[in-house]
Structure formats: C-alpha cells, structure tokens
Length: 234
Image 1: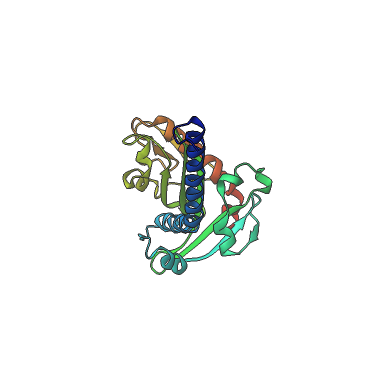
Image 2: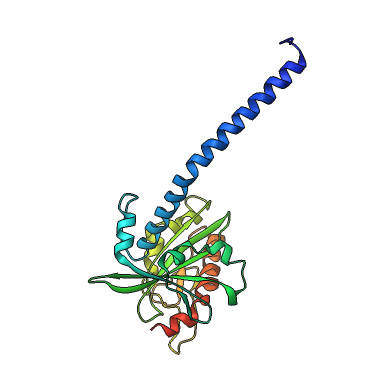
C-alpha cells in the first residue's frame, strides 16, 4: 500500500483510534474497583466527620466499624424497613431523590462512643450553584438537636460557595434545633446577618447566596423526610 496515499492515512488513523480506545477501556475496567473502594472509604470518613471523629483513608474503615454500631433503613412513616448495615450504606440518595417519598429508602447511621454517647447520623443531598452538594447531620438522642454537621460540594466557587466545606461554616450548626418548642418541624432557615443565639437559623456564606439557599433547601427536603422517625426515636 502506498504510505503516502489518503487511504493509508485514514486506515492508520482509524487503527490508532481503536487501539487507544481499547487501552483506555481496559484501564478504566481495571481501575473501577479501586475507584469504588476509594469512594466507599471517603463516604465513611464523611460519616465519622459528622460526629467529630477524624480519620484517614488508612484507618477510616476500622474506625467506622468500631463506632458505627448499627445502620438502619427507614421510611417516611418512621418505620424501620431494614437493619442491615451494609444495605443502609449502599443507599444512593441521588437515586432515592427521584422516588416518591412514600417509597423512599432513608438511611440512618447509629454512632456510639464512650464519653460521647449515641448519635444518629442522617445523610443529606441537594443542589448548589454549579452542581450537587451533600453532607451528614448527626443528631442528639432527643431527635431534635444537631450534634454536628459536615458538608461538601462538587464544584462550588472557591472562596464563596465552597466555604460550606470548611469547619468554620459547619461548627455553628452544633446545638441548632430542627423542631420548635411544641414539636413542630422547622428545619433551619437561612439568614444574612447573624444566626447566633437563634436555634432554627444558620448564617449564609458571604458572597455565596445561591449555595446557601441550596443548602437551606437541602436540609428542609431531606430532614423533613425523617420527621416521623426522629419523633418516634427519642
């Protein structure tokens, strides 16, 4: 074949594309289990972070197994549908958000540590300005008071909406309450100014109003799903 012909150039280029595609596909398949494992470890780290337990990729699984004493799947009526720890961990909030509330699976992770006591950890997921935001809220045994919170994002603006992943933003959530004095669900409301001293409010991120409103909606939508369970679990 004439190596200077257009036909040769086309066939050579097509062959190289096929070879590269095959190599990339093979590499992706080989890396998929490792990527899935890394995501699992990161999720366990986030769950632990909501109750103030620092972990690394090396010790996250050990600490998770030690302090997350059980995990449940509940429904919007507050009934427990599963006590399988592995099943609760696998619940995908992104998929569950598309399911009718009556059929939605709601995971609950139960933490227990000497000197700290038992806490319930609830996952939350919503939308920020540029993509998904998510986190975990740990609750006191009274079912209404927040013990700790951790949030993260996929692509919020650094220095603005991305501040939700910083400890300075998350720490003030401790002690906030999602039910009022008569037991009515309130969630937490966004304020511009100061939420200090207000049990049902949180401060907006300076310059990150859209992300803050997304977080407010995330808390309202997700925590309200657990209302009956939290009331019955006191």
